Every structure is written in structure tokens, then in C-alpha cells.
Image 1 (cartoon, rainbow, N blue to C red):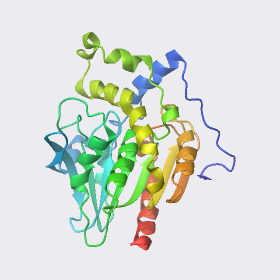
Image 2 (tube, helix red, strand yellow):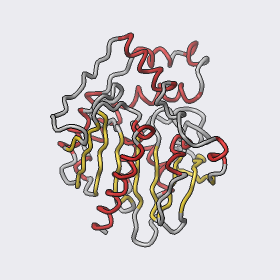
Image 3 (cartoon, one colour):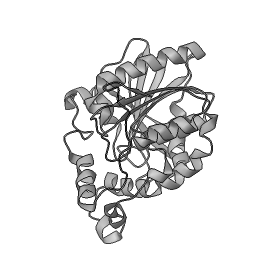
Length: 293
């Protein structure tokens, strides 16, 4: 494991948060200074990014909306947001595409402009929404970049589409079922009197997070099948998804080519305040994928 800021070993953080701190963390994840909406790109710049849609085979064919930039003939790099979120959260990356690559960020089912209106809590069904975007250009397979629960979905998409995914970049990803602990706000938020007062993304996020542990248990039995290059980036000060997920993946991804980066004093929102690190990690990952093709 590589700690790019310190030579000291990184100790896993406690996964059980005191109730008042849990409330603070929950709301800071939505509205805090490092929340997804705090991006450098202007609304005008985001509006100029090409938006398209495709149909995904969920229980019924649902429309999946996505943003698309870069070379149409380049290798596809697909960005998958967490819970809640939407494609616009990746705008700073979509406006800074290296030559020869295609960047795509989707609104996951239940968020943004994608269907359905209600929550899609299954990792398998969320991965089905990614599948239509996994276009291989020449012999160049797609790279998946996932943040938080989006990393769990990226892993699921790679498991379900092994011939079309060439590499994984997992940012603050949730994988260890034993580290998933719902806070009381999430449970209360699913009650009808309260859920009616909440927005669609918050409602759907509550349902997703309460079901995530079950999905990770099922996924854990297949992780040994991953045999592609994988890069894991996690902050050691992440109060939402413990850094202990890194060691969990190291134990489970026994056939993958792993690179690990543990960022010192960094919280959960690394895509937005650690972009240079993510860009460099992605560049290295693509180089490793090229060597396997």
C-alpha cells in the first residue's frame, strides 16, 4: 500500500459514528464545502457539454442520460457518481479531457435526468445502466471511474461485463459489507411522512444506502474474478466510507493488478479537492491497461 503523504502506516478509522457527529457528516456530504456541487466549472461551461441518452435494460427499458466529451474515436473513460449525485459533478474532468480519450459521465438511474423516478437499489441493475456505454473502440476497452457507491457499481459492471472493461479506478469506494452501518437519519427518511418532504435524490439515496450492504455481500463472492488493472484511491480521514475498505479489497482482489494510494488527512470528497492526484492515477491506470491488451 502506498501512502503518498506519509511513510507511517494508516490505521483504519472507527466505522461507528456518535449520533450527533453522524448527523453533521450526513448533511456535510450533501451541502458541505467539499460536496459535489462545489466544482470549478461554471454553469455556462457545463451547459455546453454534449448530453445524450440511451436505453438500459432495467426491469423495463429506462432512459439513461449522460454527458459526453473528448475524441469520439478514443478509449472510453466512464465516470460513475456516488449516492446522491449526478453527471454534472464530474464537470471539471469532462472539460479537461486528455488527447485520444472519450470521457462520459452518466446520471445513474434515479438521479439527474435518468429514469426511473424512484430508487434503483440493486447493484446489478445500476450496473445494467452502465453496460450500454461500454463500447470497445478498436481493441481499447473502457475504463471505469467510480466514487463512493459509484465505485461499488463500477466493480459490479466489470464483473458483469468482463470482456468490455479494461481497468478500474475506485475512489473512496464502499466494498466491505461489515463496514456498512446505516445512520438513524436514513431509516427515518424512508418513512412516508418524512420522505414526502425530501427531494428525489435524497429519497433515492436513503433507499440505496440502506440496501448497499446486501449488495456488497453478494458481490464479495465474485471479487476474485477481477483480473484487470485496478487503482484504489482513498483518504485516511474519510468519515463516510472507512479507509479499511482498502485492505478489504487487497484481501479479496487476489487476481487483480493493484495500485493503492492512501491520501493523508483527506476526506471522502477526493474527486473535487484532489483532482491532480486522480488525473495522474487515471493516466497511470490507462498505461497499465495498454500493456495488458
